[in-house]
Every structure is written in structure tokens, then in C-alpha cells.
Length: 130
Image 1 (cartoon, rainbow, N blue to C red):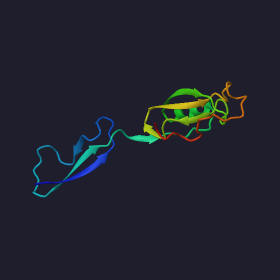
Image 2 (image 1 turned 180 degrees about the vertical axis):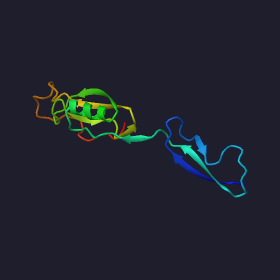
Image 3 (image 1 turned 90 degrees about the horizontal axis):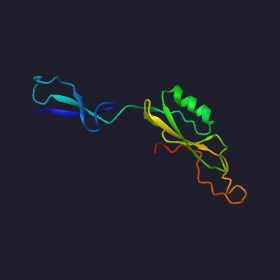
Image 4 (image 1 turned 90 degrees about the vertical axis):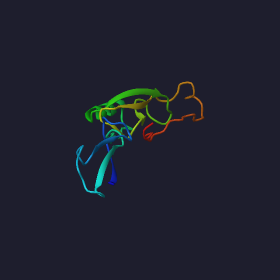
């Protein structure tokens, strides 16, 4: 009887929950009670995504590209965030080379900008990885 020790590891090629490797070669002979480490995938390695909320769209794109990320841009009206400024981003950590969605302010909604009510539903904080 062996004594298993489970160790979680990041692995880009192995699905979460599956064995990546063990610390013993296949066919090894060991004594009863030997501890065998089983390395189980907890998914791909992730890296920090630069926080670009509050940056101009051009600065944000440059910062993401410099770290090896791709990006998608979406736009929404915001009465509290200047036009062309990043309102939110889709992740604060992701797999290297991942695509990060940035929400860019279109400025105030022309349909409501004359009113004294604030219908702005945007946020100036990252969404934390939707």
C-alpha cells in the first residue's frame, strides 16, 4: 500500500482535475508505505493583467500589448467617466496571451445628458474577471 500526496500544479495542456505526472517512474518498485506525489492540474498558469481602468484607450491597448495580451474593445455611455477612458476590464489575471475585454466610455449619453438625473450604471473599478 502506498501513501498518496496530492499536489496541485498549473498546466496548460492538462484539464483541471487530471493527473499531470507522479514523482515515480512507471513500473518503479517501492516499499510499502512509500509516499507518492501525484501532481494534479489546477488549470493553465495565469499571470497578472495590468490594471488599465482610468487609462485612455490607446494607453490601455499599449499596456496590454506590452505584456503579451490581446484585447477587445466595447463602448458604453458614462456620465462619470470621460470619453475615451477605460471604464472596466474583464480580468485582473489571465492565461498569458489571453484576450482582455475593455469597456471604453463614450462620454455622456446624448439622450439623457440634458436631464438632471444620473442614469449611469458604469463602474470605475475592474470587474475582476467576468
